[in-house]
Image 1 (spheres, rainbow, N blue to C red):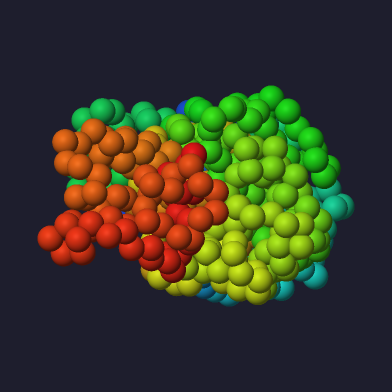
Image 2 (spheres, rainbow, N blue to C red):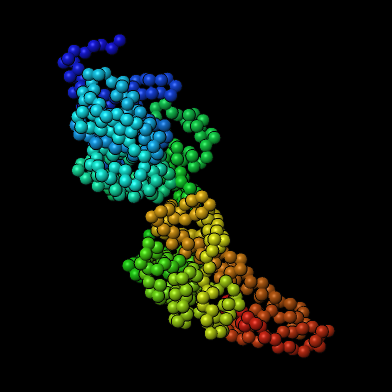
Length: 541
């Protein structure tokens, strides 16, 4: 039986509890255990440290493993604040109504477990989502909504599982002003992939770029967990579940397009450009033009004044490395001029923009600038553009459809996973971290963009495609094959000479001599017009 305290003893205990929340929790609060029923709340050292951080820092953000008792801890901290301090307006925002109501149940369990003399203020209102006290303090828990807490001046805001709160970025924008009078905030969650407001706040807190104090609680902070426990728990868990539930790993916990291993490999290859120039210094160079190297210039084009960016890449087709990258907001006609200047500098690189509405404007401008080395999917259309009046420019570039997007992204993923494509850009890495699966579709998370990804995926497809004439290795193989055809014991008059080899040194010659065997045409030379014209450009000069 607990020792009865004298009046002075009770007053001393009230003062001691008001000064020390950890003492208050361990001495007087009880929790509802799922197996053991109502038991005393005995905090672990890491929980004591968290309470100290709550007191010492106005804003706290917690990245945590599962089942560490943090929701139980912050509920107890809320009770301590409301009972021992006047006019404390405490709001808890949960992912759904049931979670909010469960939080209030924990609060009520604590209050019921306290001796009556310790509960100095009386309860004036009590329902499933709110408890109010005679000292003006209140604890309220609500599910996520657009206007949650907007009209209140808050003393303490707690957002439970913040990474999973729908539209948390918009919610936080409305909630932050409610703390302007000195309110405090505790955001806690397990990770839910990269991107989003919670991830942004936490990563900035780690870099000391905001006012939040970051607290990271891995699975092993719990004193009752060891390697055997971890191995047992993870035996039937997926990599994503382990990352999300136990390892506090943002990248592996989400449905990112690339696995964490590939993202980490890309992160390790990032390096500063050797030059930044162009509009607003957004043209980044990692390589200057190399003599004898073929380059591909792929581009994703936006209007220039909206949320999306225009982007392009210069790809060295000899080693599949990124030589140049651009990302910025620029009008399509200015973007075309920029592509023209960079592509000419890089050995008249093949330009392949996405063929959308703005892409057509870029292609038309490139035609007006008399740029010839533009990508056509059809060799026949390429011929018409080069040797006709060029009115088919609308058929140039890469046409993006649901099917073609799936193909180029699958190829892009495989190229990055197998390190066939060499990337160095921090900007690209940042986009890849927020490029995620949403059901069966893949795209940038809300508030982020994927312009560099789409530009590079197009370029990667062009250089990798078996039908492409821009792959240097394929050109070398074709050239070697044709040269091998030179050495032949058969007389020239008895062979059909390859039009590629016969005309390889002629720039424009639509008439190709064809030699047929004597037993068919008596060795007479027949002049035949090739409908595609000179195709020597396929293998280079």
